[in-house]
Amino acid sequence: MRRVRSYLAAVLIGILAVSGAARADTGMLDWEDREIAQALDAFMPRLMDEENVPGAQVAFIRDGRMVYERAFGVRNVIGRAPVTTETIFEAASISKPVAAHVALQLVAAGKLRLDKDIGLGLEPPWLEPGADGSIPKITLEQVLTHRSGLSNDIRRTSHSLVTPPGGAFSYAGEGFGYLGYAITAHEQRPFADVARVRLLEPLGMAATGFALEDAQMALVATGHTGLWMPLAMVFVPFVAVFVIGALLAFLVVRLVLQQPHMESRHLVLPGILAGIATIVVLLELVGLGLLTAVLLIAFIFVLCVALAAVLWRLVFHLLGFTRARPGTVMRREEVSGSFWTRIAVVLAVVSLLPLMFMSVPLPLRAAGDVHPAASLRGSAGEIALFAQEIIDPRLLERADMREMTRPHVAVGHGAPEGLAWGLGIGVRDRRLSDGDTQRTLWQWGSNPGYSSLLVIEPRSQAALVVLTNSQSGGRLVQELGAHVFGGLVELERDESWIVPFAAVAPNF
Image (cartoon, rainbow, N blue to C red; front, side, top):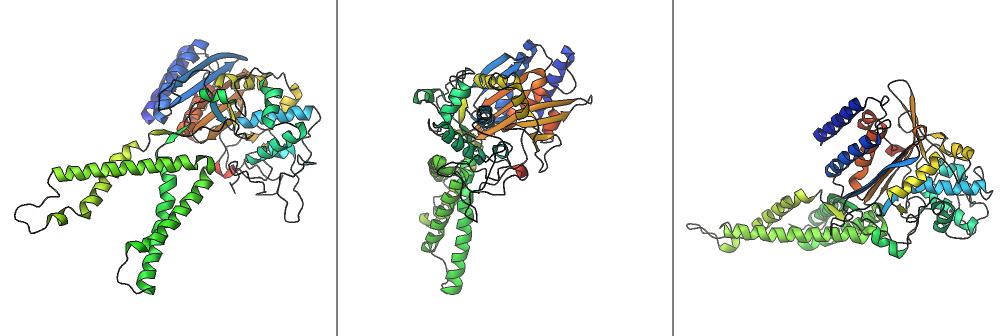
């Protein structure tokens, strides 16, 4: 992988040397359109192969116009239908700046205020009462700058505070859930409809939405994850709790019941407890929507292990390992007992290890499943239209857009210097080798089975949108962003367009 990346970097440097026009550390921003297209066409298939990403879309605009829009790979590893530029992806957290733009339109219309409690007058209240019985006050500005004090748990829709509002930056998706509730109440119609009428339709984003029509679901790319991930979610908590339970059962049997050895019935209760613990952990990690899919993947894997074990036992039998040999006094039943079965199971698991990084599809989000923090779905080309609105606003005044995109709060928590947050969008100031500063606006996204990135450089009127249908696409989207806008050195230091883990609010 490192060798391939080094090769890609060499290609980039070679093209850069030929073009001779790029500024220091600014990637492809000064390249000719043809050179950009050639480089992206070469990079994407290789990066997708490295990161095991089945399908992707890329859109790039410069000087306010679309100069590149391509589709790569397949929508689903089962069936192999190709991705097209009309294919719909989950944009994940790119939803947040879109929702923020809608909120700022309501501010401009006098229906919301940045410095006022967004829950004022809402019935019933969305927030749970505090210890004193009163509803905490959270301003719109605090929500958009991730200082709401709410959690990042958008699967369980937590309505309680984690920290007091107005503190340090703490990335909290559930603040946008509160915002969606407030917008619905003020506009007297669902948030998804408000976003469509106020933003998506005026920008020509006809196939993009927080909710989709049923007919549009046929165009949605299926999300994928590595097989190891759902298996780890199931078997790690199960084995951990079962081992602890079995150890306690052993102590009870030997020390309390004074029995000489354990029997299989003594492991029934640890097994039940391990199963319950696994369900609880899965609900925390993936929520109810993906619980069945994760358990089904684990069940199919167990069936495959059982089938492989049977085949290994057959191999042992054909090789004569389980049959009595001349000159022995062992019965055939003794030779072919549990020892060879255990060996067969171990070999079966080892045989299936190469499949651990195979992509497996996940169920699609329901068409009407809406959350302002993460449910936006659309194509890279249409989301690039939103990026054009950020660069050259038509639906907001330029002063309002400047307010949205200026740094309001430093990310902190170990984030690189110059990483801040505006009103619903990240702001990154990167010092270049020539002493200049490059400002980019950005939002990365990660939903179960999907990874995405939006990066905008207002000075060049450039924007990149990358959508993938794989949980493993996070590195790909960041690396492609570094190739386009510069910053490969920062990428290797993990200082790309993402906030540190410590800057993310807890899920409970």
